[in-house]
Length: 102
Image 1 (cartoon, helix red, strand yellow):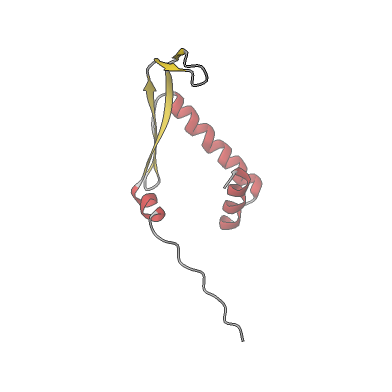
Image 2 (cartoon, rainbow, N blue to C red; image 1 turned 60 degrees about the vertical axis):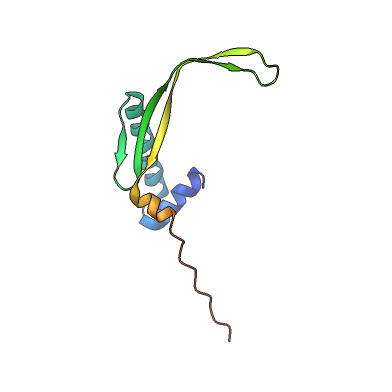
């Protein structure tokens, strides 16, 4: 599912306008990004937790020629899934009922 499909799905489920959903989604992403940039976590009970982890600089190898390269230190984003989301993902969806042909 891409961003447009997500906006369409949320609009269909909530009855809100796509414009409102798009603004809300953009705001959500900005707030989460800004919070993670400050090295703080974002916890959505039942869904999951976004956190950051610092990765130190290290030495790697260029796979094309085997040359050693320096990989700069960076901050990575981690997501730990919440219990409710994990349960939902691991439950088989209900099968759609087939209509009887007469």
